[in-house]
Amino acid sequence: MKTDILLVDGYNVIGAWEELRQMKQERLADARNRLIERMAEYKAHTGWRVIIVFDAYLTPGIETKMRQFDVEVVFTRENETADERIEKLVSELSGRRVQLHVATSDFTEQWVVFAQGALRKSARELEIEMDEIDKMITAKVKGIQERRPFSKIPLSDEVAEIFEKWRRGMK
Image (cartoon, rainbow, N blue to C red):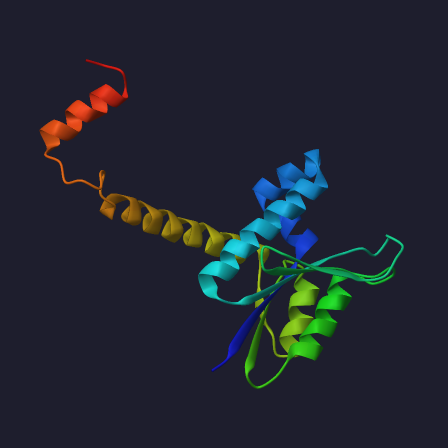
């Protein structure tokens, strides 16, 4: 059985998704957090391991790794771009039982990781996939809510209507 891993070029996706691009104008941290939340939904739905790489190229310091919502988040070290870190991860994580997917709209980066055996996915393709996942999750929640009984005690529609009026303070 193959393990699927999605590597996400964080700032590239933020720049490509309308929702995140608008958030970035107000506050970059909010856009980052929203992307992490969305990728946690992706992970929960697909079961894939998700690693988001953010560029810290101009920020002094060492590489920072953290886990948020069961998603791995990497901030590159000083003088290292997200593209360079993603290329290293593709090299490190490649194996016969691993299928790597890289989400970026950077055309050059797509070809570099493709040449190393990873599958490429544009930021737009990932956004479309997330929209489909959202629709499936919404439908699933709606189905659960519709199947759940209104009351734990079986009531006729007439009695349930009377109780609902009482609950709302109507006579």
